[in-house]
Length: 74
Image (cartoon, rainbow, N blue to C red; front, side):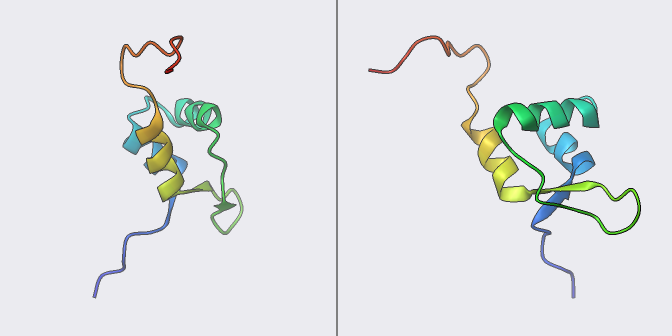
């Protein structure tokens, strides 16, 4: 029986999901979006773990390409 989808992603998995060129770029993007790591993988040098739903929600909420973010909705 296969395991259900994990609830956390490593930065490498996040980078792949958001289409970032590198893990550093993904970290900067997550910082701008206000997504913080929820934990770390066990062991020395374990990678930071990010909540999968927070990442998905933040990506869905960003403005589309070419969006005029300077205009306010009234």
